[in-house]
Amino acid sequence: MPRTFVLPDLGEGLVEAEIVRVLVKEGETIAEDAPLLEVETDKAQVEIPSPMAGRIEKVHVAPHQTVRVGEVLVTFADGGAPGTADRAAPAAESRRPQASPPAPPPSAPSSSERQGPVPATPSTRRLARELGVDLRSVRGSGSGGRVLDDDVRAAAGRPAGRDGAAEAAPAAPREGPAKPLARVGLEPPPLPSFEQWGPVERQPLSHLRRTIAERMALSAALVPHVTHFDRADITDLDALIRRNLESARERGVTLTLTSFLLKATALALREHPIFNASLDAEAGELIVKRYHHLGVAVATERGLIVPVIRDVDKKPLIELARELAALAQRVREGKATLDDLRGGSFTITNLGALGGTGAMPIINYPEVAILGVARAREEAVVRDGQIVARLMLPLSLTFDHRVGDGADGARFATDIVRRLERPDQLLLEL
Image (cartoon, rainbow, N blue to C red; front, side, top):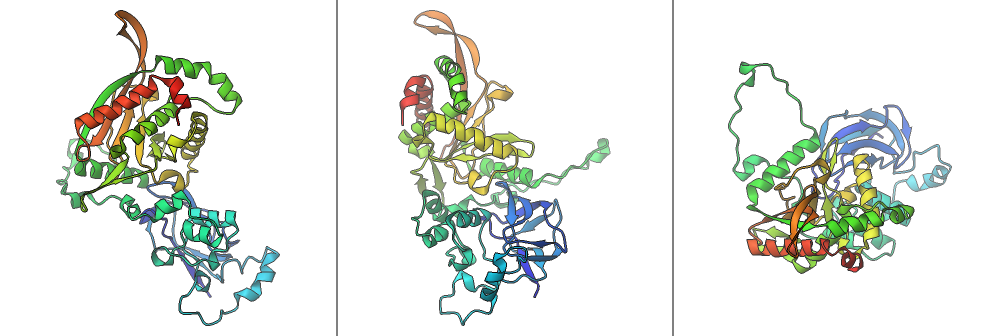
């Protein structure tokens, strides 16, 4: 009998996605986990795999269409239990007997007794494949029976990982889509008719651009921003990077200033944990995060995307540089996963390659602080009574004034500067 497949819950409170590409055609027979659609959320551009094998009877969506979680994507003409309709695979024959109607369910039904596809995110499906777990045998503990990463790990006999624990934390839903501007008291007045003054062109915003606009408006409206400016003398750091460029390349790594910024900031956050937090205004509590997952703003053709590097404080600089390069490449190629883009506790935006003398970045809500970096320039400064040329890096720390005062921001920025100005120690510090 025909079965429908709807847009699954992608996690992180995401409620909609924009269809980028339809990867199947009506009448085509596909295997389980074959790429079905490519969608763009406010977090990433990801592939949605098919939850079952079978023939595509109807495709209900088209490119550039925005769909919400629960809306029908495709209808399968012969969508039996996942995997049973893949006639091309020899293993399918051996699985056919298992497709017969199951025995009456016990009082606590498991995922294997669902008549439709198992609700799970693409990353959870990938984890299940890596651990050799059949999702149909896993009982989901998420909303609506959704199978979570921790459910898969438990089924595989693995302890819950740090990332899995973070996904199950109560604060996770707060990282969902921003509220409409009207909900935060910023109902805009009607726009005038611009056509009366000359020709105009209306260009629709992409899903990602709309989401960025909503999040920035929400952050600016809800959070009292304050920015502290400072400068770091990175003359010695620049020399260290230049000295080690070739040896690093031989190890497949490109040393960059950003990797040192990541390390210096993460170590400073250990000493200033109020900036590695989120504010629960309703509960009157500051949620201090005991992990240091730092986001790095990456400019792409689709807009600004912030991938996250986890446990920055615990990783050597060489490993950070390698991970940063790979992550940035995935983002620019549109291959970043949702896991690459969520769970950040602090953000760095480095505009140095584009120029400028400084900026006042908007906080990446629900974080409480963001570090902006401009282009380093050689300047005449006084050292030991002498005027010398030094390479100076402008920094701007924007933070939520509700969680910290000016003095707190100044001390935090000073600790970042101190580490950048002592690069040899930074290489050894863990």
